[in-house]
Length: 215
Length: 115
Image (cartoon, rainbow over all chains, first blue to last red; front, top):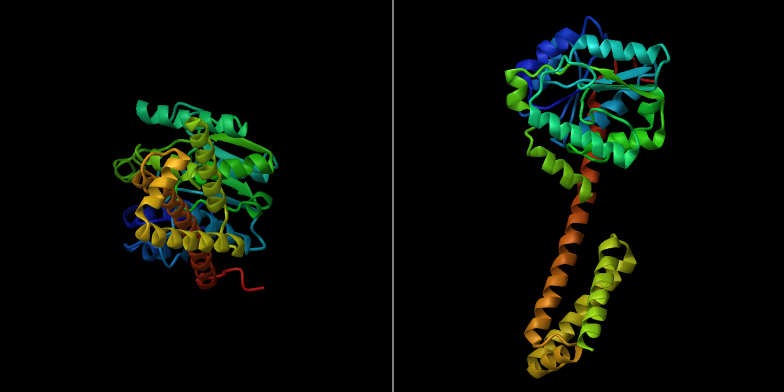
């Protein structure tokens, strides 16, 4: 399941990479102002479309509620639209859920040496993970990774209310109260020029903090 | 003595603001807010006719001039306004999200067939 907002140049290839491995690809288009939704539909994904832009957290929640309508659904993976994740990582995470190893598998870019990352960004993400550890007691190494896999039971119990970027922290605190069997999985983040230019700037972490403090 | 009075005043202001901030849009808090507006109007009219009244009240509670008292009252009411507006915005956003999500889910194709 892909939350999608104005990623028309790359979303097509992301979906075409996913489809051979995952038969059901759902894009939640968060009121994109470019051709993202059409490109996604043409590439073969099911598109659920917000009439207005609400934020990534809202898109994720809509996606969860959509996939829960399918009685056959036993597992859902969230995947970023800008192509920074590897399909093979996602497949491995689903495999760990299907063979009963865990109910929730969270991607982490710090578990192996594959991801090349700037030192400032690394420091911010590590600090965020440390803060998460203190506030929830969950020993995460990477708190803001868009690649996550949930089984049906956990998905049904997620109710995100943070519409914007603070949903990542909210999700972890929901997991901390649900106490599913969870595990981290080493994933590679591919920082392309495109994802760098579109990705969250470090300043955005200030917004995340403010969203969390003044809710 | 003045310190104690000021302390009591500050605590009163903080408590009062908290009550107003915590309360959502239920009838009780609305009533409290309306009473406040009424008191404010009465005070305003009185201070027009008897300007010295405000200064005497200010001296009584130990904040100096009447204009200072006005300033403090203004700051408190502004903070209350800010937080109630913020709260209302959040509620509105939640409503909008629910509505947009309903539309999105209803319009989406359901490849597995409707139950």
